[in-house]
Each structure stands twice: as C-alpha cells, then as structure tokens.
Amino acid sequence: MNGLKQGLRPLYHKARSQVAAARILRDQRGRGAPSLPLPPSQFPFAAGAWEKIGGDGIGWPADQFYKVRSLAFDRGELFASLTGPTQEGPRGEVWAFADGVWSRIGGSERNSWPAEPAFVDQLVLHSGSLYAGAAQRLWRYDGSRWTDTAGPLPVKEKAGPYAFAEMDRELAVSFWGDPAVCVFNGIACKRLPDPDDGWGANARTVYCLAMFQGKLHAGTGTGKLGGSASSVYRFDGVQWEKVAGAGMRGSWKANMYQLRSVCRRFSRIAFLMIEGWHMLRTASLRTFSG
Image (tube, rainbow, N blue to C red):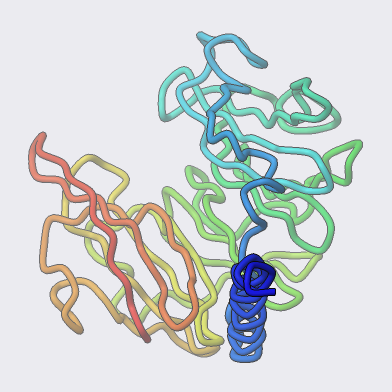
C-alpha cells in the first residue's frame, strides 16, 4: 500500500498544479489579460526554425524591390506590399501568398494602379477588405479586383497615403509629402485639422497612427536620415495636442527624426524611434501611458 501511495503522489501533485494553473488563468482572463499560447507540442512552429518564404527570387523578382514595407493576413492569405528598386520606388506592388504560392495582385493588376511610378507603404484590413495607399490614391481590394475608393485625396499633389488606424467604423489615413491625417468613412476622405502650431518645421510625413485610450495618436518624422521632427500628437475629436517630442512629458529632446511604427499593449502605447545625427543612427523603443 505504501508503494502505491508513493507511486500516486507525483500524479496527485501534478493534478493540483494543473488545477492551480487553471484558476490563475481564469483570474487573469477575468481581468482582461490575453489568452496564453498553446503548449509547444501543439504549436505549428514548435521546432523553432525559420523558413524564407519570399524574397531573393522566391515569389517576386529579386532585383525589382528594395523592401517589404507591410504585411497583412486574412483567412489563410498573406499580403505583402513591396517597393523598389530604391526606398522611393518607383515601383509599388502588392503580392498575395496562399497555398505556398505568391501572386501579384496589385500594381498593373486587377484594375489597380500602374506599378510605375508608385510605391505602396502600409496595408490594413478594414471592414472585411484589404486597403492600400498607392499612386496618391486609397485603394480597396475585395478579393478579386481593386477600386479607387475615395477619389482625389485632400492633400498636395506630391503626397500620398502612408499609415492606417481603425476608428470604430471609420479608417484613419496618414500621409507622406504633406503631413496630414484624414478619416475615411467608406465613401470619402475628410482631412482633420492640422495641429494649431502645425506638425513641426521639419515634419514631412505622419509615419504611424494608433487608437489608444479612445483617442487617435499620430507620430511624425522628417522623411530623411536626419533632423528633429519626431513628435507624437493626440486627437480628441476636435483638435490635436502634442504629447511627446522636445522633452515634453519626459520624452526625447532632439535628433529623433522618425517614429516608424507603433503598437498598443494593455495600458501603454509603444513607439519605435530612429535617431539620426549625420551618419550615426540608432533605434530605441519608448512607451507612453497616456
């Protein structure tokens, strides 16, 4: 009998541990914490190995593109926006990856924009459709063809869509070349008022957008490998308020020239910073609690 107890003891403690873990998980979810990942044995990439699925001649031609600017995923299909052969284009396309095969779906394809001259920056999925900014227009893809969904945009001629953020039923769109933010209601783009003091003397692009604590946030930059135009602005539905830059609220003081991307996580929002001074460049990550 003692031997049986000894043999069952590890199973008993394991069961208690599993019950305790289940309680902790239940409490965390009750407080709004995210679901935990699947155990390694059930995770599709359990081996931890990377596999190149696009680039260097895999999918698209190796010598035509400078970078993959953005990715989006929907119902088993991966979308990538490509620009090249330099960072300014002049070639901009969208490719789709499904069932192990890449195909070009945007840029001289399916009623879309001409591939040249154009560049495509960020992609976004909104209300069940894929959106892209190219050739100074906002385009919507329904799975078979593209539509110029908003017509001429309320910005300068040498400017175009750059980043996106979902705002309930509307879509916020930022711009390069003419720093601005518009709101697309499904029919047209309405330009929001600029900040009272403008976006800054050196600002050329609103690089990133995000909703945080119910308000739209925008990060700016010079569009060059130097300068000091990076700031963060918050829109309350009527006007913009500057909340970061020039040392405001403990933020960076100078030399930050681009706010490249933004991510929300629980009670904070994170911005990827790029610092430039002549040819010395570094990157850092800053968070803001609102």
